[in-house]
Amino acid sequence: MDVLSDVIAVMRTGEPRSALVEWPVPWGQWFRTVPGAAGFQIVLRGPCWFIPEDGAPFPLAVGDVVFLPHESRHGLADAPSTPVADHVCDPQEDVRFERRYAAAPAGRARAGFPVTVTLCGAYQLDAARAHPLLNDLPPLLHLPARPGRHPRLRAAVDLLRAELEEPQPGTGALVPALLDTLLLYILRAWLADQPVGGGATGWAAALADPAISTALEAIHRDPAHPWSVAGLGAHAGLSRAAFSRRFTALVGRPPLAYLTWWRLTTAMRLLRDSDAPLSVVAEQVGYGSEFAFANAFKREFGLAPGRYRRDSRSSDRPNLDATDMMI
Image 1 (cartoon, rainbow, N blue to C red):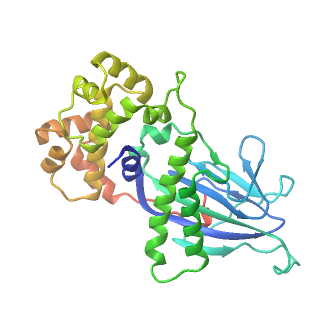
Image 2 (cartoon, one colour):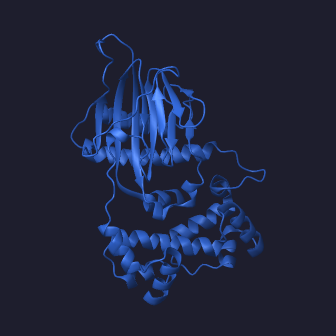
Image 3 (cartoon, one colour):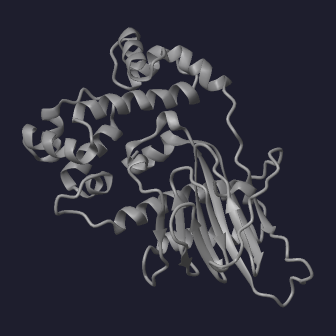
């Protein structure tokens, strides 16, 4: 797998949620924080303003995508002057995806009045397996709709919208797959829009750097390989010293420290999602013995791999509700 696919595969847990909502104008709504969740809001029709918990509201145009990678309370409204209501949800309700109609203002019929239509979704992320790529993202990613920009993202939005507007046989399987696809396209689009060079740091610069991205792809493609700094540097076409300096500056960890962390993070996923014996997990992530693997895992995460497997399977995880969409 490539780096971006790996990041999502490791952090994602549970099933994503999505809803298509029609809001009769005037309208305003706060969306609560859901621990460990990330999500998006997309304007499909009508007026819409984004209201951060801290900061000034700003307008969203039709087609604009807003992604919040970290749990964050926020509001939406048809205008900055419209009162914003607190979000109320039924914690017993567990809806995977739906089309929803917000309540019309008292005394006003729906027909004939303007509406705003939004597409929203949420993803549950495992904080214990947080990848620095997502941690490196700002609190809010705003992807304005521009002609000719990010056509695959726009296509994914259109497909998701169609499935929610007119469910058909297979919609139950298509919507989660489209939500995962949409998340990757959102991250791709944001990374593509970042200016790189001129001393830029962070994961946007790391993935745009041919040498460092080549080394990262090698680590993610085969984490069990006995990589060395010199070997990764040669793979990237750099000297050992130059590679180590550039990798550490952009990724935030020295090459072998990142390799160890990624091996053990991959092991966490295998322990949680498979029944493979510890010896097999150890081998798959590059450890020659179960004992060496267990010691490394405990040093990194503070508990033995067997204990982590038991605890992760017995822990209760909150269900995302389509009405929480977005955090």
